[in-house]
Length: 142
Length: 291
Image (cartoon, rainbow over all chains, first blue to last red; front, top):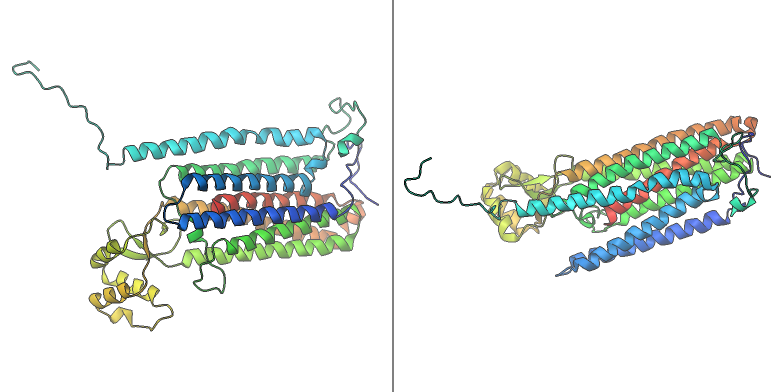
């Protein structure tokens, strides 16, 4: 028998999917995802230890870890925080503003990468191309 | 889906009911967590920007490779996975406490709140150990003046640059002053026979250092320590305040406040905060330890 905060403002009480079965299933999903992440992390470590690490491969594995992390975040928010059981209005008021992160991440990492490119171009080891001033003609007036 | 239970055509926005079908407190907790997500997001994105802007960043598998009581064993990712599992487990006990609250089972709420608090304290202890280990760690790095020195990982020092080749170490040792040589020798003689390093001559010290298995590296970007201690510290502070909130909730449960009120919604709101702390850790774990 469930007891809830009641007020005329609350139209209905979402079924918090009664049993603890779903909670434990989510726990196992999160554990398996974490173990997969760790396995990929160790794989990256071993690729790095090798003679000629394949950077594209490492980047691919890092991308996979990011996707696994997003899956974990989805399970925590949707099941543990019960956002998945709430009405659509509440879900949207939280999720839509967070979409700003998509551009936020893209723009800033792009900017950082651009700094690296510029720094490597002008870091002093490669001299900045100097424009040689045109030789003055003899007798020319200043 | 539970939304299907709502009558079709419910007019959510015409007044008289919460358009979010939730109490004021719960909606505000969600908005607070959203703003907190932007704060953490800004920190992590700033870290990513700086990391993308330099050629070499500290390799997490080298920085975080120790475990309490394991000595100098190389165990990459081991300790941080323990911390991650502690936090996931305490998230599960928290959601079980919320569940017991729905069933108005006071004893159950108490039990799971106690377990959640223990999980939070265990996580904080792990973090304290990790910070101590980094702040007092001794790693040999090449300073900008061309000498070798023993450096910890702090907001001002980062000994985790690229590895130095042996010739470069030998050359740098020649210009390193006596006190720095002595501290390097003292670091290296862990486990071996103990010399009185301060009394040894420079030539003897160099001979001893070169005969030991010396690993040295360039210094890394100074921003590493600031970002690591800043972001994990901010997260640790959230864990700490979460533990305090959970203790308050446990006390109120024991005093029977929620039974008087007729519902355990406060446990739900504290639970939202606690799960958020776990959520942030998932991303901190990704950004600092995995990639």
